Length: 217
Image (cartoon, rainbow, N blue to C red):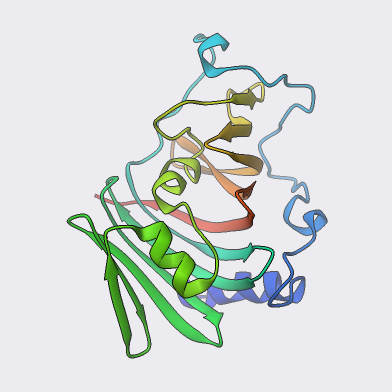
């Protein structure tokens, strides 16, 4: 199966549990798989500075490609889409959303500090990607922070709390007014990366299923 068919299959699974205004039920996205990295339900939420430095840690890739499916919802808007995300360091990305808004493919790119939004014949640019996405999709996506959160690490700045499992992998992170829950991980080479994430805060809920991770040069 090629990558696009694999991504679309993931999206169809997500769409089956979600209307255009309803996020899939947590039972679907939080279902424990036999291959899921084990997580402890008794981990206490503690500041990162207080956690043991002797626990095993991994270094997630700074540049990557991931594909899967995403569902996003606010009190006014909701949509689901297949997702392909190519990231080159913290300052450059290309995010393709397939089918979130009436079936149109949406392309969001950042290059040299400028964010460009493309949907059909529409093309808009802004230095503020969060505001641009809110105006065009109805959902404010914290893309700059998601670059860190999607890899299972905290973004720069203050952290309210974090809980980790026995493998030192994040279970829950509270930062910048958001709560990020990590319900499943997958092994990619020598690194363990999130494969199911739920984010909630600032009137937005996002659920992300990652089916494929690939570090890029």
